[in-house]
Image (tube, rainbow over all chains, first blue to last red; front, side, top):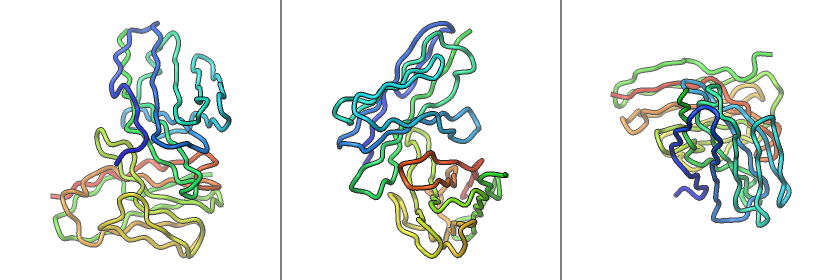
Length: 112
Length: 113
């Protein structure tokens, strides 16, 4: 079954508001990646986190990797209509040859 | 660079038919993989390859075969299509399995009736 869980599954956001999506793994991860998929498109890589407690920013997006390397979050500030899409986290485990396991994704809808 | 290409973009099959989904990359990546995407399920790994001549099963391999005769190509074969295989299929490539970003193809939308 799914060992990388993402919440929430859906997120309706008013333009200009902030929101956070969370990713939780049942086991320790060697790294975590985040992808964005626009409606009708394919997943596009956003970022990778490797170190415990790591925080990375990309403009209005802030990514965090937990201290225990079992969870991660993506926080978007001042949401814009261009943020519409589904955000996936994908964890790599050290004991599985680095194969990525994807979460189910958070589908983001932005209301103008 | 074309990146990762997939053909066809859309396909309708009848139950029991077989077909091959094509995937090619021009980035000289050793690692290639196939995922299927179903609503609410995220992306699930079907098969993957760490280099020419080497393939292995992912999370949901049943009903699918793969081979990797060249670095560039990684076709996915459906042996006898079933309605449960209705899905969107993505091929991806990267320098290594989990330590580098995956480049995804545009996907193939498959319907099995």
